[in-house]
Image 1 (tube, rainbow, N blue to C red):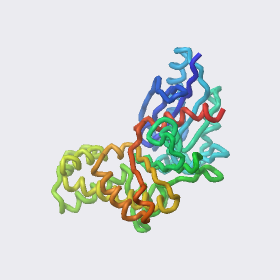
Image 2: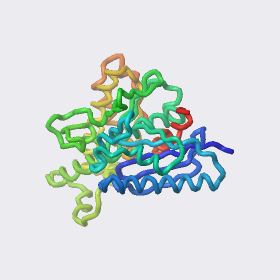
Image 3: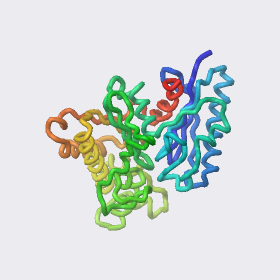
Image 4: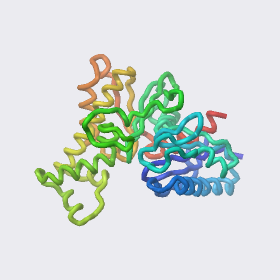
Length: 320
């Protein structure tokens, strides 16, 4: 009987569950929208329903389920399994998510921060394979971060280490979901990109096709802004240049602190391409110290948006 792990990647916009083989191949996956603004019990029900779909398929295929691995955003206490903070899930604070999930499944449950899970996916099967010192950013609705040193995740006593999205870069900057101002997440996430584009549009100083979306009351998102930036829209390019610079400041600082050379960028925002990566790389080179900056490599996830769910699915194999 073939062994598989079931993985869950819980995002602020979508959640993805998959049955994954021990060598990192996705055999079946399911995706749905995340009810992130709803009560904790509704979020829980949505997670359970999605996992059950993958579980039932796996059993119908006569696969042996080794366990379930969860990639969870924000701060979930590694000791208690209680949500301390999920910035994009305002009603989850204090919710014992792991104990609640155990009521629905007979398998062993393992969990990691979602960015940690993505890093493990890339480390074991992707762009970080064979590299024991690396840092990952997952950039979507929020920004997750993960640090690997000497082949081991940097966790801290409760598992809260690596919250790179909540580095303060501008103390008077926009309010972040964590309650602080000027976090990297508040400056460079997809939500921040949309907010910044709307701010510049309202100033009316730069002609842009993006204003058409607002006039037609159509939803503006980071992907649309990236598409227009790559077509030459000056306002869209300005937004992504600013975003890249904020990320570059963070990466350069982290390179100086940790003496790490490989930085992997994943999540929807990474698909913007050169309009994001060029200013990011240029700013990183300015901020990192001589002797360090020449060795830095910034790359995209090889596994793309599947890195998190693949990494989560490996937790039962590596923890058993």
